[in-house]
Image 1 (cartoon, rainbow, N blue to C red):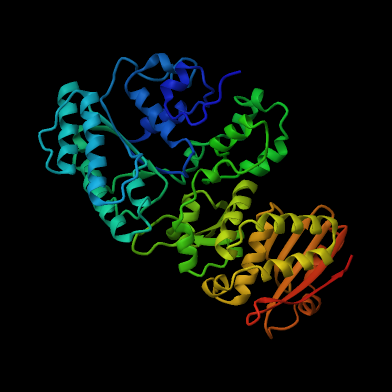
Image 2 (image 1 turned 180 degrees about the vertical axis):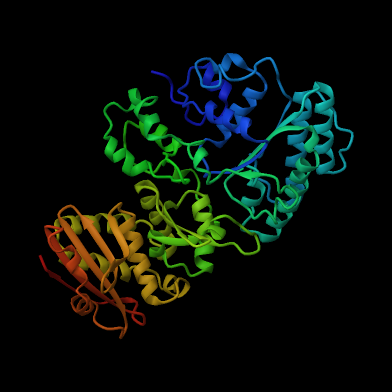
Length: 511
């Protein structure tokens, strides 16, 4: 069997050393034949760098690397082009380091392409000089490939002024691309975020954004067909239904895809289901945004946002929803059209992301560390066996163990919102089938849990907000599940915002 290309982002290394490769060269040719300037946003560890490397090898005419691939018989290998590749990989936390990073990248390209820039006084001038001199030297138009175009900004979102400085540096760089149109054959920029065009791309308004173009939905990532063919030898004894539940589901308005990094590590680990992609780096600024916006965590189960929200990212007004989508923590479940307005319904793409994100968020909500795993195990065992007395004792202990400061700092709009968020995060971190704000014809259930033969209908109340269990009965929330589950339980949980504890925990089995 071919070796797994874990962490390898260079096309030539994969092909020369006989690593497994999922052919994306046909999509690359479609892009080149259809236009000139492209932009693509995809989450980290999704294969963006490998696609950039593939484009570079294509334009440099490295025919030997493409034997047996879609591009081999379709490409003019006699014509080659100078390729300028800007790849941001380091971490720069001040203006001097940011400029030094860009200077290093430009110097590296000058050395590889054997040209020398005369204008080194400013970034834009040097880049323009590099483009023009490559055109003159090679007598061919230039190809520009930008990998992680936004990294200087994303690395500094926790220090707003530095993020703004990074934006201005990059704006000076990218504006040069449009100004050099007569010398450019093809340009492709990729990164995680989609900053508003009036922001970083104010001078580069001719980019075609293919992020949500259904024709290129599988440009990065593995499809189900890829797993069933290219990776089939590696997955022969895997539980494919479970693999799909855990790692598939990223939707960019076309065929859903798997995160390749997660799949490769899953295979390499011997088919152990765990969070592989998520643990490679969760931005700490997400927690800052959740705190700042008093975000109600159960909303993440089913968000509705407009096309204008999903399509922009402004440093001065950072919204959580587009970041969560662009970073890969949420994905598109379906699209609704209302006149001229397009609405996207977002949710977690798969169990890996749902479990991992909520497990991560629990640290912020509860400040629990060593005892968290014990609570998670006890909750799961109690719900699996239908032992609600044990469930009650665990939930009571859980909230009693949360430090006082967490209640003060995490109001999440209301104490009811905080309690519901903690409950939701714990349950979601277990990988359970849960529905937040479950819709019935009489209202919305706070939480519904499905586990094995058991279905649980939960309602929360704070202080004198009423009797939670009685509300379920009065509204008959549970009736939609009668005859669906073998055992149906209704649970009402009341909290005290003053005592910071569970004051009532009642339940009944209604089927």
